[in-house]
Image (cartoon, rainbow, N blue to C red; front, side):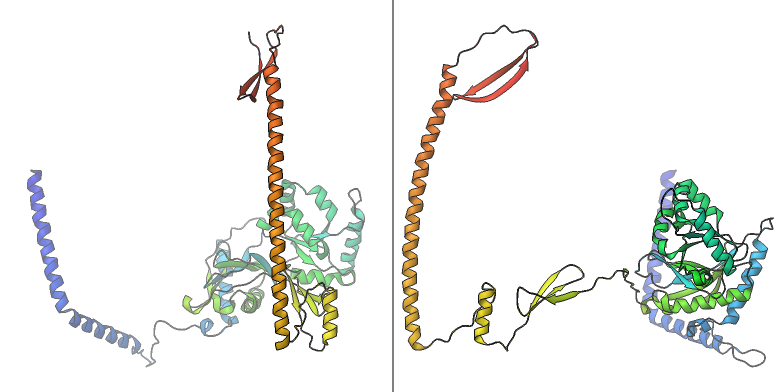
Length: 479
């Protein structure tokens, strides 16, 4: 039965293959005609789409249209404001009403065309409207007036509270640096401090030490303190300048970055102003500039992303942006004169390499050059004297005499070396014979010493080969 079914299936398969082969042969012959017909159909369809007219007689444009954001390098504020209003409506629909009305952040999502080659870093840039309200909790980490572990931190707290109250600032709590090190050194204490405050400020003098103390808990939460230039005469200006900033993370690991530019407790107009100022900053400072930005979206944590700028540029038109990190303390090349070599300068590179450059002095006379050569221990070559035909014969005779003297000296030295080697070999042979006699005599004359041995005593076993001690074993008696 199974064999019968298999034979039927095989016949059907062969028939199908034959039909396909016949179709392929026919299509090769008629292939050019079919291609021409398809091309004509495509052109007629495109013309119909372009020449479609409405009732009023206006011509409808093609489906792919260049947007304003693609042609110009600026965002239109009207379109941005519409997108912001839509995000506010989405936040109201998605947010659940609770007793604690927390702020819901509004962020810009930026995608690049090509991922840049740059160091990982967080950059702060200014915005016109601050993200801080009267209800936000701010902590200001301050340098101590007196250093030491056992110093009381209350005088520093009182000093800075008086300065802030005189400037009209009330919603900031002061934390001295010694108190931070003593009370918040453990991991759990740092997490508790992180949850207590929304924004952290730090004096610019101690910012490096504070970042080292806070560690990875603040880095992961993106709550590293903002450095402030503390000027007691005008402290309000420094704090307001630091608070009117937001941060962006520039990474070489992906093509998307996020920046916080507002929250739901701000007005839509304030958020649009922040977005336009952020776009102006991105043109100059984003790796690759505006040409490398593919799209910009407005987004909240629970709402969908609304596009503000989109380009259809090909990746081949954009080069990979490369940004080299320059450290603060940049080393420079240094050069100076050398006292040991006249007319020479020494150069030290930033990498630590040393180079010596010599300058040719054409103003010096022959006598001065000879004096310089004597002082510098033959560092520079002496000027050669001119030779005439009469002097050439004398020079040849001198060279021949010098060669004869050299050959005689070499022969004498070779004879001395041979004599010294023969004497050394004779002395060594005599010494070896004396050592053999000294080693053989005690071994031959040595007699076994009989002692009363007990269980557990140490005994040395000696092996002798060719009249010499080969090995010595130390063992403990068992029997």
